[in-house]
Length: 357
Image (cartoon, rainbow, N blue to C red; front, side):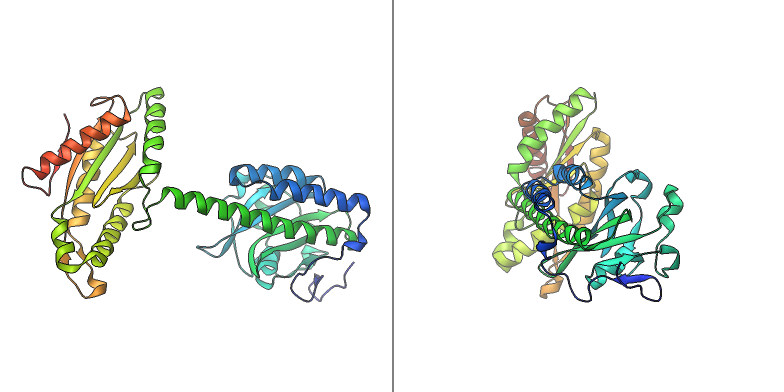
């Protein structure tokens, strides 16, 4: 075992992790690690990656249980992603700040940590044991690093033995986990970029059409409604003519932020083209959709735009609402009806809401 520190928490490596020394592994051990690495790095779908990691790594870790923490970039906290033999629902709300607990210390220091006796470790986080009923006696925490950035931590609970071979395997697994996690992150980002509008960050038409069809199919089976809001900015061309295309794009970006602030999943907003937007509202009745349209209308109308760029612009929009299945039974017809309802507003005064009846 590595030499204990005063608090029984010892650094196996007194520096950031580098490539492990593979010479300590037997041919069979190395082959097993390679097979695991091939399986997890070949998986690009984040949904399938987690069960693949759980299945493959469990075969290699001689311990009572193990967990995978991933770093939430927005909050800079570690959250449970996998926990073998622990119901994730019981720990889903746990968050470890960088430096909190053994896993948080490993993430912050980017060093592999071995804790021989957690009862003597002053920064051991015991709330998980208190919630799950498990008893942690010893720990190994391995930071998962990619390009010098911490992605997460692999935590081994009550390892059956701690020797050079096991630590080398853990370091090797952490390296391949980093590649797999980064690959899936980039794959997800590429998929997002393919269905997102670059200007507003909302979804684009490529995402709208198939998703709307599938949502209507789901609502049909569940005997639930679905509503659409079609929104068009009023006299927006005059803003572009007066202030230029760059400021026009900036204003549309600010409008999109206000739309986003008014809706929540599974509803979603779409940059339909130009200065038009569509909001898809699964399980929204007509009356509920009209209320949401009124909320968006107020939010858009009451905000000054382009103030960050030295301007003070007021904007309004016109809205059309159509609902499945009352108005139409398919996505194409529903979009057309919402669009027509919006245009009737444009032709009769603007800055209003028209619900197709």
